[in-house]
Image (cartoon, rainbow, N blue to C red; front, side, top):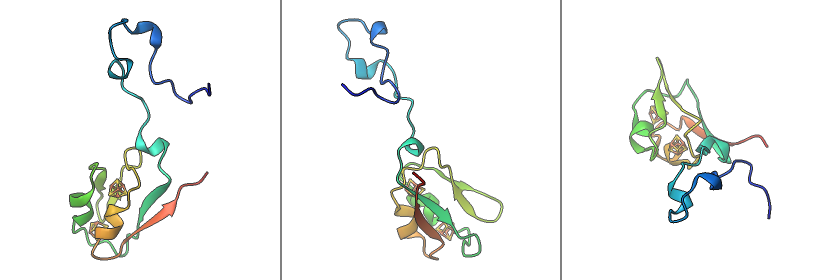
Length: 96
Ligand code: SF4
Ligand code: SF4
């Protein structure tokens, strides 16, 4: 069987009658597997917060003059890009 990059759980700590998936959270965040990321054109952003309102994982963060993203938790779905009324967000491919 192929070795996982990050182990899902330590099997030695699991009592025999428990489901292993429920015993320890997976440490991976969306930033570990996302294939696309959002980028804001700061010159176009008017801080309307529409991206903040629509982001399903609440990873849009407010900066002094624009809105940006917490790339550890952003899953790259692109909803913010579709919803931004000013065309200020682009989705770019993650580097390999
Ligand atoms: S929706 Fe677009 S213009 Fe509005 S805050 Fe987000 S990036 Fe800026
Ligand atoms: S790509 Fe999806 S998860 Fe990431 S900031 Fe935009 S709406 Fe949120």
